[in-house]
Image (tube, rainbow, N blue to C red; front, side, top):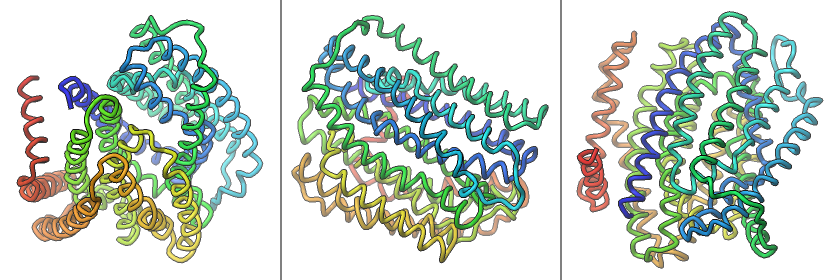
Length: 505
């Protein structure tokens, strides 16, 4: 990749990472206050309603990914007229989407009593849900402008605003919760800050791109091409929601709404690590999209192998740390009663690991725009997951619901998408790709066993010993991965790149 692409990618990663760290620390404090003031029942409701609104986000038809993709070429060619036409089109579409989300969201209200299962009834559930719907609608404002920033490799601007406003929001919510003990006030504050954040991002885009204004409209054939991509991405969106956005609902229906709160505690920690990994690859997506427009096939393949090596190292180290530390963290934070059994933990972390090592395939898929080739496979994956989640959920509870996601991924797109990408874009055999995955899993299992044996003498009874164990686990797992991968040319490139950026800074 060129220096400009590398610098933009690293800047995007840095500010996204900073945003995640600050938000996690504040969320940790805020959640502790939330549990203390409102209890686990409200925590379960919070997680359940968040997931229902995630399912409602299907209304955008997967437009976000297709929108970013459609900006790549006109930005590279500096085709301002085309960019303005796209902006005007997306603005109109998202206005309709906000209306659709509102209508569908309100229509779900009569069915809430069938989804929520609590030992004690909670008042004002419908009001809480309506406020969640309003927050979801507010999130669609100016989203077409933020997509322009992502496509232009300026995602760090969004991360800056998000960090500032999320930090203020979390503090204000915690303060109001302590003073009022009122969940409605808590949700109203969330809506206000969603609006403020989006308004400021919209203002920043207008300031950065004052020349992207006018009344241009897309030609019919151009609009048709975009909507063809949207239709394909829509199936990815459906698949993503059915794979990742139904767990809380199924847990509520099959196990109980209170356990959604238990699961959300793990998700807060694992989700933050997952978001950090995703920000690295999201920051690279625009660079890869730009790379696709002008560079040769050999360079594409080399960049892919470098990114894949990075995903193996980051995903492996993160999985080891989470497996050996998360139960100790939960125990110290809110008590041993909130800890899951080992089967459930392994199911959660197996999904996490898979999602950590597959982004290189996904970002090339998005950057290359090959949505149409695998759209039906993704839908099949989602259907398999939904059926298996119900069956395994009844047999094994939460662990079964989560394990179903892993199984459905492994039997479908885990093997098919790499075959397609290697055939269409790399003109190379995919055999080495699968061998590298197998070797990395063997390395992961061996590393977990080794680090566990070395650190098992540390008994975590307080935060000081937890941080000692955490530091040792992180150092040992990093050393193991660095030793194993140090012989590869992709790893050497990553190290050299890191050195150059540090020296430049």
